[in-house]
Length: 384
Image (cartoon, rainbow, N blue to C red; front, side, top):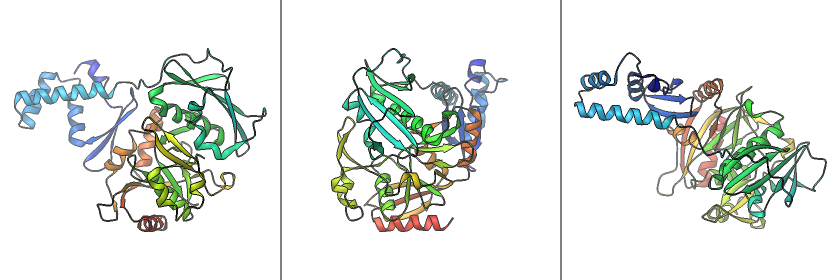
């Protein structure tokens, strides 16, 4: 195969189980879960000693395929390799350092001993960040440790930290701005730098004070609602929707945002959470979904910064199925975990992530009964 094709090969290939492998493509920092058969076909296709014609001939014989079927499979592999090596273009290349905010809304927040000041260009932009950290608000002060500025220029949202531009994102991809801010704030809180994080997962994480369990699931499947229920029963919410994994100790670290719950959960949580009616209702996203942000019950300053994690639970609220908690395949978890998460592009971090994940126990929780879900998490923690 030619050099161009060879440069599209996965940099890392790791077995997940006897049937499944995880491929990592360095150029795009993309992870792909696939079967061992598909991985072997990719390897054969990229063999520098074979031409495309010989590849088609060989798989025709090996898999008893017609010539046109084998040729179509080769086309599919070629298209896949091209697609999976496309670099992420969500970040704008526009330089945001040429604009200073003259009119802005300024708010300050306290995290442990750090004072963070944020200058928002408008109330709309403030709404992207402030509601999640409002419970850390303090009186504005000139004695801040870090100053962020957030503004919009044309169709781009820009993030500046201490006068240095650190990110520009298309308005429709505002969640990338939120993720970048969360990572920068995490650095401030935990006195570290971005290069030390292996990953940040789009997941909620709870702790019993000794270890943590990560909760994942598709939007609307009840993971944040379940987190609040567990908090009301004595567990600690380490993170909501943003869970960072650290390089040095392979532990999940605290991110002090409030937990967002959608309108459908307001009534369901009333029996468990005092004062939910008093929380302000916000509208979020183009669909104007009603959301409340529930601050943690436990004081941030008094809690441990990180915990080990050995379990991930895929959560699905479903009234049509019997309540159950079952072991599931790693593939099932990875298919949900990877697409919305950021994983460091460093090869050493990719290896660490894969090795960390291979030790994780994977579960799926189907539930409609809150007490069932709470009891199962109690069992998961006690089984450790």
